[in-house]
Image (cartoon, rainbow over all chains, first blue to last red):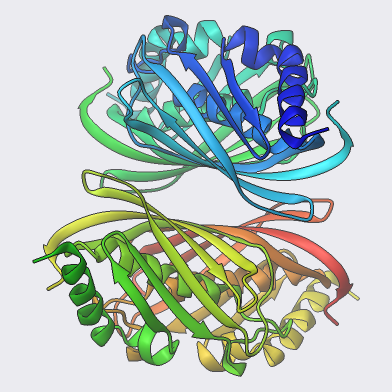
Length: 140
Length: 140
Length: 140
Length: 140
């Protein structure tokens, strides 16, 4: 199968079973391509913390999901081993957050992916870096 | 006010307004002390990803919340500037995750906090490090 | 002054005083441009550790120097607040390591820079991310 | 052999071959114990950068060396896969920097170690976290 078709199918299959991203967080899977992905979510009331801004963990979760689709997109089952995030701007109620990112390197079973979370004005809300490790098995 | 009493009150005030941690994630605030905190959550069906394990972002969110209570516990309004996490073991449906952690250093407006997430068998699920920056204002 | 000329002058001025990069590590400053830089060094016998490979700290030092030139290139005195590195391949005696990298974001006084260290065969040896903070003063 | 004796011998063997730490950086190996280590170095003129403070990469190198002794101390050959550092205070000419740190977790072949670099006044200069991976072979 063509790598782009494969990535799209992997994305669909993962998303259908991904209760956390789809149902709980209500993220939309915008694209899943070979080595990259994009997802979007709206900041809802339920996502606000005691400072009345979006909980940073939920911004991280958007980036971590997008990273998961990107690093599984070649149909090798892959998990995150570690991640870091820099928070640059707060996100507020109603903000539409889009995360986009791609593989920076894939060597053997280990990969490194950079993700950027932006708001509806194009401002960068957070930068995320994830390290992946392939495990046995395939997604499809 | 005594620092321990102050920390406990800050925790209560933040938790009451923290829709993300309290209502959405259903975390319990176990303790909020000067420079440290502990929180607990159960892995629910809604938190599972396409690999049928707890979404790493939601494990991060537990740690990030606990970090937020620890770094605000002295009643100076404080936000996260960046965080990193290492995922050591997957968490499964029904697992009870406890996060505990404390300030490692506080210099001027910048602090560094280490958090450990463990499951009900005492196994370490993730290690988290957060950097904080004090902003103007107080919590109470 | 033109931003490119300014960056080149900042690079020259910093390099002349940078005993660690120039004399001790024997790095070459390949370029210093607005928001980006490149440096090169050869792995010498003195840089080997007990596993007979280049000490990871010295690979980090190459990336950290390059980051310093990139984040000072606009002539605002700037220091590193924190950095992370992923080591992907060992470097051996005689390897020629080149580091290149650029600003990913600059918001207020805080920036984030990504650096890539490659060997003479174009293989990626390490990926580095640095966070910068502007302090008062200028370089020139 | 007793684990403490084993760690001490591993330390001696590694240090004897560690040209970077011993000869180039002139670090002293203060102790090598099971899962922990301590090293010390003086900031020399050669280590200063263009801001006239100790190059951050060389502070990292002290922490990275100490981490290497700690994670090899059980005589399984082990390398760094990734590290992060937060710089808290600059170090100046003549400062005596001591790094101490220990294993936080060791699971299978992967470990996580925290290192603290302090100056002669006991002020914390940097906090470092290193991730290790065991490879095949032993040190002795």
